[in-house]
Length: 276
Image (cartoon, rainbow, N blue to C red; front, side, top):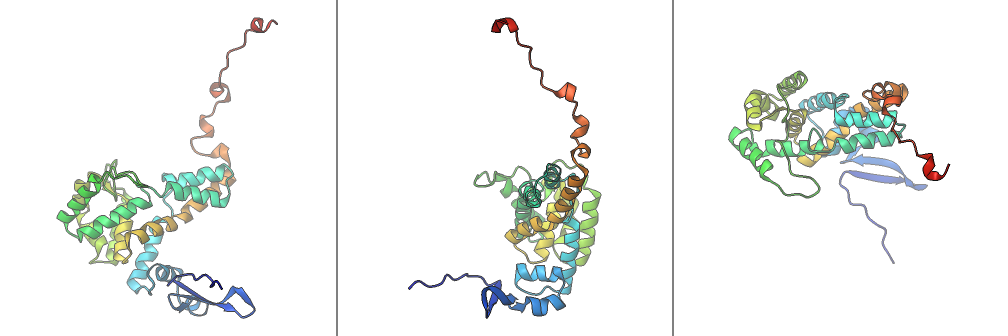
């Protein structure tokens, strides 16, 4: 007699309704009663931390994660993942299609979630030591192994094409660092300019996010996933807006289309060749 399959998870436990084995009567997240206890007493940010870490956040961690979510909620139309969602919206894609476009474009190693993964590993290895940080940067660039991802072409967490560190990044880092005075964010804030010289680029939001995740005791895999999740709000609203505005108002499209100029020019056929 075959046994019923068992789902192995330490995150979620359920008790089925007596009259419906497919519906849950109680749901526990890491031992906490979600609908009987967490719903009444916790904020979404506290619950989000519980999901990832399996424990309640401290007041300091809650505030940091809450402000970090604001920092990355909307990267704006300059960001490639936002533009991907906008393209989906103006092109008539489904809601899921728009978000999947944003996830796909925003998952990479240049301003994307996998760059956060590498940046956190750099900060974690460095342990707030500039010499170790230099070693981690060099090791990352020296790794030419190809698997799912191509080798990194710049130091993760930094923009190789930056001229000066963008104001919003400086502002975000300074505020977040004040929330964790002795953490990775504070060290990054105090050593930013020297680190930028070492990385040959300006600090990027991926580097700030990775430092914040390290202060939140998240690992590289968790930080990568959280980065993707928190940025979806901006992608969603920009896709919805472009869906309503239509393609004629879409940036860099309608203004550049001239039907007479851009239409393909086909040579007129020689009717004598067809015996006409």
